[in-house]
Length: 436
Image (tube, rainbow, N blue to C red; front, side, top):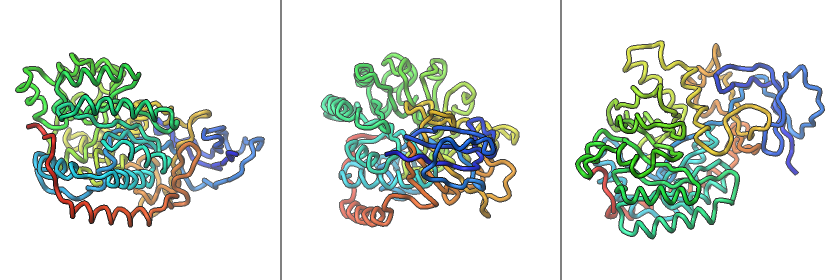
């Protein structure tokens, strides 16, 4: 039987970055059952477990809007190289020899890192989807899963049918799992294959998740190959008429920008852009007109899967490049962090009665974050994973009293073994290429 948990005397950080002080928040049956001012609590709702939150802050859990979780197995393997070399000489060749075990362990390691940092849902875009689903189920995080489809690869038709069958088989498995159709990108999916993926999404009543304009030359490549901009190709294929989550959009062209709707969301991942010197891009000039939150990309490019770090870099880069320290405020950045929930179908991201109990309990009374003038400022600019005291998904603690509930020691031991095997196998021959 589900127990009722009371978070007593908590300070609640709301979606607009305002704080409600001294609240009792009850969790029951996976949802927020009641929120009441502490000294007005009549005690009618019995708590089986009480956590004294008088020194803590409580926020909704955060979402990672664009990740390649299994790539945590490659974290640090391709450093200080160009984007061309990163893809074509390192990552794609290593990926060509990945095993199911690599995907499973890399995914599970990524989830451990995210839960440790207060992330309760993730939009994953990768292959080896059976292993991804397995890891998501075992760990308890919410997973929005898009099996990656390369339209330019041999056997695309068979792969698409396989993905459709996989989604049909698993879409009712759990309310913590959702699916999308996941074209890799316009430059790896010719227009005719994009159209087939759009039709598959419509047939299954699903949205889409794909990369968009993650490098400066993507639009140039599109013009050279097809005589059309990326935006024209996406529009003609029907992508821009769908519910869609775009990873990046750093260099989106005007044909994309002028065809945005409220069904389109972007996941901005600035750490990858900085690290790989992908340029300033055009996203910044459109940021007031697009719906976006933050992703992390994969662990092989961003090295961390912490969306708070990505949000911090977004704010700092914005202030630095615009010469305006008054812009990119903590309130604006926090709103984008929490707004990312709206791109998902889980109904999370709000602290209100009836909402799913996906919560983070923050201990900000530490040397890293003290003194506290504004809790959101402390979280965005000072906090780290040690400040995340508890992470809850659907009323279940995945991190409790500062420790992950999963068996981390065994996981790390398994990852060490997989790393050794991966290096022994070495690189294979990639079946796709980046902008070639």
